[in-house]
Length: 128
Image (tube, rainbow, N blue to C red; front, side, top):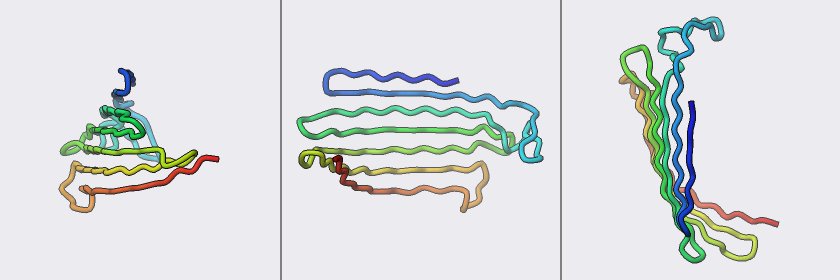
């Protein structure tokens, strides 16, 4: 199941969506039975974002969360947040920058399966 909405109020845009997936039960994938295993398909996800245009600039903020309900000891969860801005540099040229934070928490306590990080990305887009 999936649903989403976008609303524009003047120079402000707000969007949100959610998804819910149930476990498909007993089935075999690549020779493995997925019913009641750590490979469950069950999970939930949602996101929300807002952007606002201020003159030649657009700024935005977004949040995303996803949780996989595993049959094992716990859930896998991923959360990400972003903050960005863009502006027209000249005719056909747009510059943008984004700051991103992502956190992945695994059902296990294995360090290699639990990750988080930051990224700062800038770009210049040229349209002909």
